[in-house]
Length: 168
Image 1 (cartoon, one colour):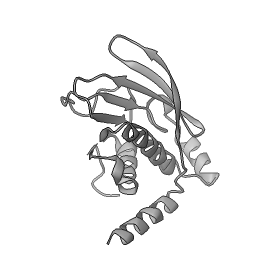
Image 2: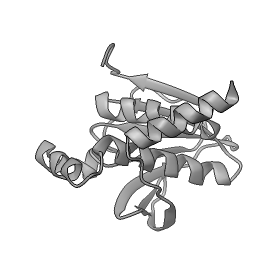
Image 3: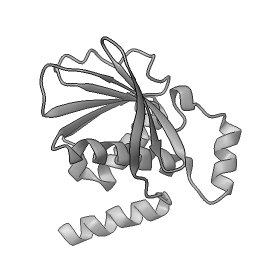
C-alpha cells in the first residue's frame, strides 16, 4: 500500500542518516556553450555545468564518478538541457576513502550525503516544473542515484545506471 511504501522510504532515509539539504542560489560563470555553477548544498559546495538544450520541460541530470569532465555514460541525444554535477565523492569533490571513513565516524554516512545532494538537486530542478531524467556512471553515484529515486520518486521521471554492480 501507499502507507507501507512511505514507511519504507522513511526507514531507508533513517538508515542512511539522510541529511536535509536545500539548494542555495549559485555563483556562476557563463560561457558560450555552457554555464558553470558552484551550488551550496548544506555545508558543501557542488560544482555543476549546465549545457543548454533545444527542448524545454525536461532536464537530464548526469552524475559521473570521474566528474563533469568525463564524457557522459552514453550519448545523450534528447535535446534537453543537461546538468552535470560533481556530488560528494565524485569529480572535483573526489574524496579519499579515509576522509569518507572519518565522515562516517562523525555519525554521517557518505552514501547518505551523496543521496541527499542528488535529492536536493532534483528537487530544485523539479520546482521549476521540469521533469528530471537522471543517469549515473560508476558504482557510488549509481547506488546513490538509485537510493535517491527510491526515497524521493516524485522528483524523477527516469533513472539510468551505468556500471552498476550486479549485486551488493
